[in-house]
Image (cartoon, rainbow, N blue to C red; front, side, top):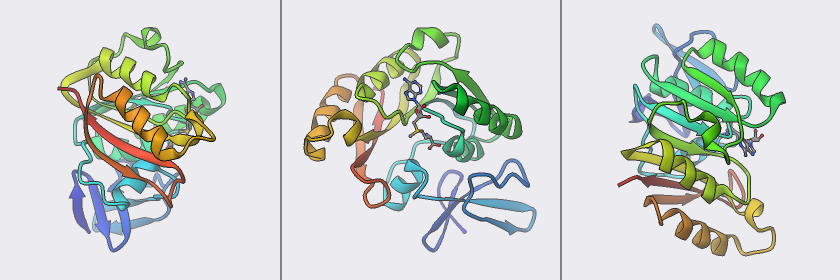
Length: 217
Ligand SMILES: C[S@@+](CC[C@H](N)C(=O)[O-])C[C@H]1O[C@@H](n2cnc3c(N)ncnc32)[C@H](O)[C@@H]1O
């Protein structure tokens, strides 16, 4: 296993995180034991950051001890890999609007120990303004307001010098417009308040999606 980003390991074409909770194999494509360590395989077909890594992104700004605001957590699948990367000294504030998903997210959070589920609408950050300033904001919310949600949340919670990552879903913003044009428009909205560091398209893992890494300067 070769560590390609802090806490992210590669073996051939597969990527893994080192589990902070031995025996927790949910959401992993497979698990591999190495001595006392257990590695969870991160599936690029089921998680957009994993797809971005496999597609060769050069910046993946997430590391041990980070505080993260995660928007659109669903049942906590991708959160569980972020949880391994940031470790027991980090924390993920995981915002999810669906009551049904939050039940599964609660159970993931109980097992991982560093995830705080928040039942809320990411369009209304004032509803969770009790959270602390964060090092990273990640957004995976399929909405026509994707860029505005990121700008609002990063403006309120992201530390200066911190990073933001978003998976833009072209079809949620405009079903008929050429995805490239949608990306250009979304990037111009985002770069009004964040510096664009890198972009990568996620096809064929996620059709018509672009992953964007940004920095608050
Ligand atoms: C593509 S799924 C997220 C998958 C998840 N990030 C993962 O990889 O495990 C998008 C999620 O965003 C949630 N969502 C949609 N609109 C939202 C909003 N305004 N605020 C918070 N969550 C929202 C949906 O309920 C859904 O669970």
